[in-house]
Length: 217
Image (cartoon, rainbow, N blue to C red):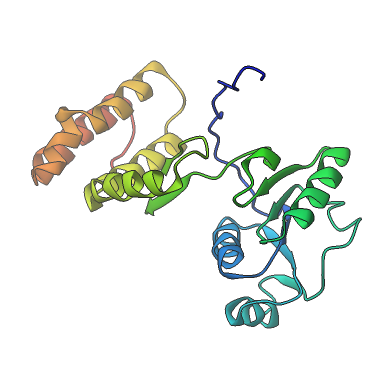
């Protein structure tokens, strides 16, 4: 018996807007995958003998491309990522063989040994994303932890993220900008906003911006 694989997944957030993504399978699990991929802006093609009513409707609306037929060799070519969500191990293995021959990354639902990457349990509030991964070992635990973490994100945090993004776009990169962005999440400004001390927080932010020669939002 060989040594167990002790490596851990490397977490990333992929920007799929405009990228061609293939999803093989169109059942309930595939539908969930599809909705997340569409939310990310991916150009989604789905292949499966049968599809859910939701997926058929999205295809009719032109939101995704749906081919209601079995997977065929050659289907994965030209895609940035490939997902498989079927209950047929043979299909998953065939897709994995093709993606690896072409250097395309694959995720196969419930088949961790075929995956080039795994999917964390994801929750979102505004521009804040929480992702919990257990290296594919305990999806139910990941979902439970994700729910608890998302519950800790308030409207205040979403507003801070939006304000930080505005400042990063407006202010030139410098040590002073870095210091101001840090103040946003610390007690000096962020803490006052969290406690409802909006006047004091905005006054402090105004003073910092004036010191940088910028007008307040």
